[in-house]
Length: 122
Image 1 (cartoon, rainbow, N blue to C red):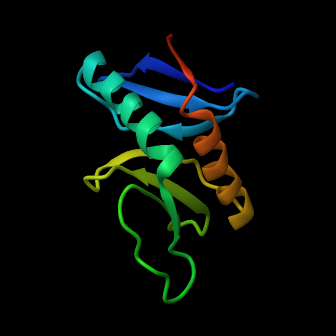
Image 2 (image 1 turned 120 degrees about the horizontal axis):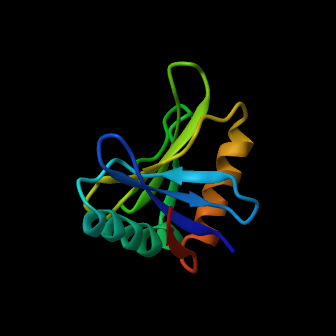
């Protein structure tokens, strides 16, 4: 089972969602405090399982309603995804992947791991 890891940064507090193998599959923004960070985790748990997947790497892609995962290509040509809540706010982002299939697998891993993941603080 995956887990949310809350950790301090130089500028605030953030969380990572780690898969069972320990790999980070989703990272949050930096929050000013732990309560806001925990609220972000709850938002991921609620939105990830029901979010549609919008593949923005294909021409003429269909724009879907929130919540959704957006798969896109970054400036370096890598595939990434972001999870947007019902209100359109970004609540988590992925690392860069060399292959589209890997990004899609990352989305599926978030959908699978987020709902039941425990939360721990480092």
